[in-house]
Every structure is written in structure tokens, then in C-alpha cells.
Length: 122
Image (tube, rainbow, N blue to C red):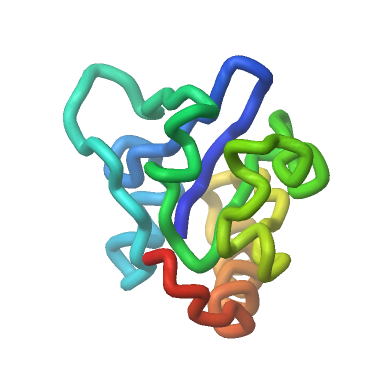
């Protein structure tokens, strides 16, 4: 699974260990695609020319502030991504780190992961 924010200039991919929410989920067994765990920032940036090659995963979570499935489908370099073709791209907004918010967020994530088909891109 990949959590990302897409914009006109490229795609920003979360480094799971650098974001509290993704770190919490990773500690509880969620497998994220880690493209480059090093570096100085919480997110890695990739150009659209490299995005499809770099982005693996059966499920893509798109930050609500960036491109969504419809915009991604319009990009020639990304339109054939297996998760996009399988309609396994979902908007995602981080939740507060309190128990109630995270419990609801984890239930939503569990449903998405449970329903996801293996598209052979991970």
C-alpha cells in the first residue's frame, strides 16, 4: 500500500516511519511500499515520468489535498497503474492521534485492505 499526495509537478510519497499515523499502522502490521527510507523529509517526491515505475502496491491512498483517481487516470504516465485500473485508489485524510479517531481510521483502513484485490504490483 502507498499513501501519497499527487499534484501537477509530481507525486509525494509518505515515508511510513516518519509520519505518526503511518508509523502506528506499520507497527500493527500494515505493509507500506517504502521507496527510499533515507533522506531529510517525511515525504519523497517523484516526477510523473517516474511515478508509475516507482509506485507499487495493490492499494493507493491519495491525500485529500492532491489528485484523486479521476486526475490520476488522466495522466498518460500513470493511467495504467494496476491499482488505478482495479479502482483501488481511495482518498485519505489523516486522523487525530486520539483513541477514538484512530479506532475509526483503523476500521476504515482494515475494510479497504480486506476488500483490496492482489493486482500484482506489490
